[in-house]
Length: 172
Figure 1: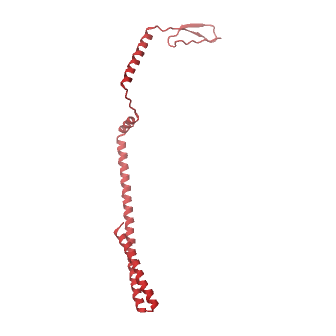
Figure 2: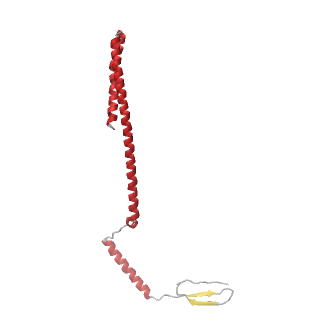
Figure 3: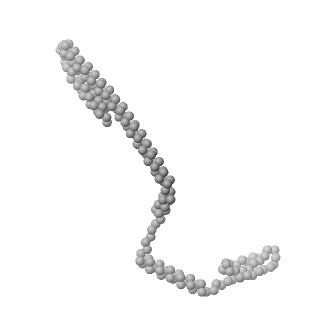
């Protein structure tokens, strides 16, 4: 709050409270019929009222300055925020590879294998290797495949090397 605003509000309130005393004196003098005291009391009332009005004007002026400062501050903060966003945008445009790498790293999980797991893994790998060696030593059985040409009675039979266990049976 601006000092003019504070001074104006305090001065206006004080002078409005001070008006009450001479006004009370005016009422008492009126009941007694003392015109001289009434005039003097009304002079004080007018004086305090004028001071209250001047302090009110001072408070209004201070409030206008406060509003102006608040607008300037808001404008400055808005400009700083815009500048900050521009800088962030420039930084993000300069380093797209780094941001992609960071995103990929954050998406990956890491796994630790315990000692028991490592032993089990070695046993499983050796068993699979032994099974693969045994199977590779056995010759693969090849079954003949029968082909029938359409609209003819010609039948061809040939061993199939790629598709093991598959046969085609076409009846005409």
